[in-house]
Image (tube, rainbow, N blue to C red; front, top):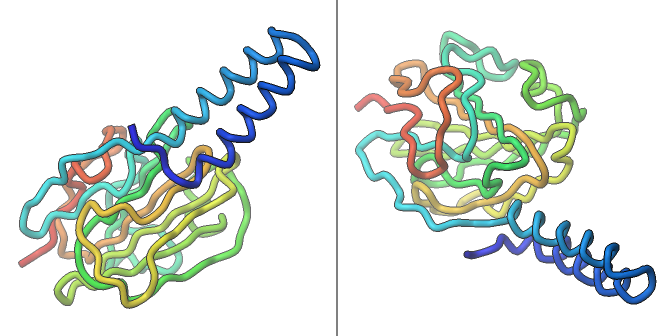
Length: 209
């Protein structure tokens, strides 16, 4: 299985420590660190996905559980204009992020902030995040990579002006986090709170014609 490039420094470091510990401390210490290396490989796994192709579909940008599905409560996205889908990623979920729609990247914005637990509603506004605006045939769709208590590093590999496809990989979040998607108020939401979603596969909303 493919491993996201951001994971190799962690895996390599754990393996190097495992070898050193086996020689300097003992086999038990080496085995323990080999287990850590295996856990890191699992965390940074990047499985291939069969992308759902459907007119107007907004796809889940991450694996996880739906925290919010309804009128936007985010500070920068007024509820009369936007709807919000929030996805919580546990450390066991795949943390590679994928584009919810195809189009052109209109803006990429970094917001410094706090490291509140990602499941708290206010973390979407107060925590550190990277925000990507996508122009999908004249309709804006916005996706936020939000850090949490454990996820304190965001990797965003897209940039303003890039042409992207729905389901395309664009980044990764390290060690537990949250993804928010904002769609115009006229979109139809296709998920409910508590539902589990799969990146690039689950349709979370359908844009109006």
